[in-house]
Image (cartoon, rainbow, N blue to C red; front, side):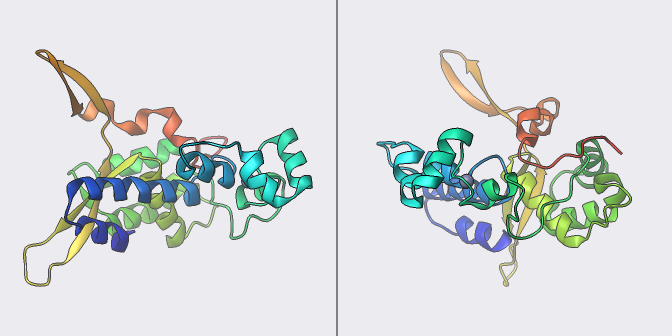
Length: 220
Ligand SMILES: [Zn+2]
């Protein structure tokens, strides 16, 4: 993630940068948050302006059986890892371990973002060091689970990021994270301006953003 974001931050035009960040977040959303069929996701986010339905463009190429399955169940009928996993099969790789939302928010609030922005690698460490609170005592969570969770939180737009380039000769860049703030439109005089609101309206409070992250059924 660091590599990609730093490379984007080096691009010259600001519009180009924000478009590339948006695209990177979409891809991360697809790969890391299991909201639904990957083919449908691709179709919805990257499909042409003249949208054809999933069944016409994707399922059609997957054969009649898959198309019929799609009619019945939605999705592509097991041709992507999300649908395969949903049907009880192996989605490739292991499924993320369920987390406690409450524990995760508490750990990140008190150990990571109390002092503001924190380097992404340190956020991973904080989650790992407090893994009992995040994954429960018996989940056996490792560093790679902490890595994945951080990426998921960025993809879900629960965490915001910024790229910081230090001023010394080496030009070392790092990605810093914090709770993402929610942009609201505020009326000032006659015009409407977009403004990021503060601590009271952090986006981690919005339930919908946690939808793609595997939450534990009971808190621990
Ligand atoms: Zn699918």
